[in-house]
Picture 1 (cartoon, chains in turn green, purple):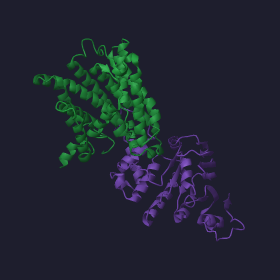
Picture 2 (tube, chains in turn green, red):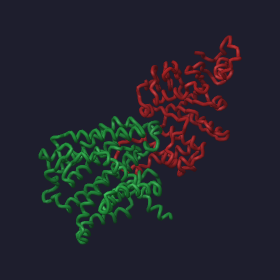
Picture 3 (spheres, helix red, strand yellow):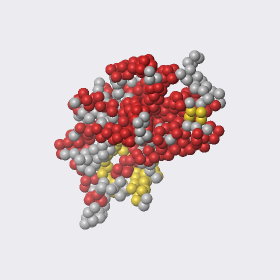
Picture 4 (spheres, one colour):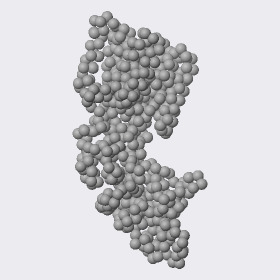
Length: 317
Length: 262
């Protein structure tokens, strides 16, 4: 039963990737390059945020330029909870998701009334407003950001301070969250969302509550970005206004476009390439973004459906 | 028995232009009721108000005796009112069967189910196959909507509207852009719909209108100027004058029998 609306998981890609991820810490210790474990965790966190953004851009046709707002909200919730003595990840991470979802619901209700360029601008505007809200919160660090006294408590005996523990906890959380999003994409809701992307008028004329469907997608994507933000706050040991800045939103969009809009795992590839490039090239020059720009232009010109489609192109010859 | 569709005093203004000027209309159940009128008469604006795409400034719409003026478009669809579009509204990058299955799935339970894979539910696909048969697209199930010929796209448009299982179906110029052969095919298809639902048909092709319609209403400058049987409408001098814009014709002394003038 071939259908363009179903996005199967390819065991040939997933199983080696998961096995590789599970063995990476051992490999890096053997190579004596443990620093790359921190980079790998960072890539996974951004992969989750970018995949959640792709639910909107790629599957819902909503080009949100304010996704960092939810990422940053998640980070701040963990930071603020910690300053008030709430350390448990089991409470503060779900709380981060809930607050990010609430922010997405509020922003969505208003911005989803607009289309096209206006939608892009209004999501950007809301994210910038939230950026300034956190800048003005002097009791929570203001411009300097809010330092986390200690990382979240996940389990007695598991200390997130350890890069290896943090890596594995991130791996479990990110894989579970991405798995959940994958179920959503292929559920009845996900198919409906893809219908909305293709033709909103026809969906409304078929009896679908289009506005509520888009809002639900917005809230789910916001919650997942909030979870990524909660992880990022732990990794950085702080929540900062920069996490809500438009640069951050732009970076997430670049990951989506690099990897492949509407390709479910594409943005993860985008995160690998973008953060990998940053890591490698910034060692040689301060102008690493120049190269990122060049890569983005090359991808848009030669693989407009994203890097995730390169394999297929290769096989077809 | 309540009328399938009743419009009472619908008014829609765009700035200084009154596009719909106090339209009242009753469509009897089981009828094919045609709405004709010159370009710019406000036919599509009226269809938009019936389907819920536009809110009227005054007046009401009722479907099978129920006032639906306050309902949104998708709520009206779920109440049994569907429409086709003058410019086809398809899922262009999806195959014919995906198009129809997606449209049919609206009735098959809530869209807010997030876990179970949609493709594990075969009902929408079964229904899509039946719909494809009904609109003569059974041989094109796997073709993308984009790749279909214009006539096939027009038929898919009808199929998408039928997927909602409407009690009343609004067809907005279903013959637009079709050649003679395809037109004849579409006329047969529309005639076959008579069994399933009440139809309000907006169409420019007079041959088709006079072949299909049980009742014809004429819309001129946002007003219904006449309603009657096709035969009566065809011979009616008021209609001839208004519709053709022929000012050389003398005004009629008495309206023809069987035509209600407003």
